[in-house]
Image (cartoon, rainbow, N blue to C red; front, side):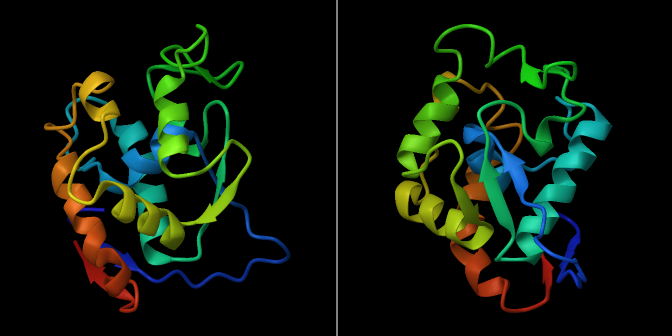
Length: 169
């Protein structure tokens, strides 16, 4: 979301729009991470995630479906196992998905729920304010590198900016 224009999408979908599928902690992370020049993940994974960041930024009514395992943003991640669509970090051991379940509880959501990007930002802003959630301390060593704190502060003004179709972050 940083360093590019977020332009209102003009879509002519026939029937129901496809919803972005996200696992629990990605509901939060995708709203705050800066993947421009990310030294952690591979370029294909970063580009895939930026595409979904832009979709959610440009359309406040973008539909999001919460999934148990890997979602749309997991493609090309080194931890993603394509054959069963699971993450080697969060999906094979009992309790390993605590990061997802804690975030869902914090946002008053469950697996299978659907939400818009605008409502998701509102819940994140209301729940966390300017403070990163605890999961960022115990589950992610990359919060500083990915500038998540700065991204969280930006959520405060996103709702006002989506009224303007051209946004520069």
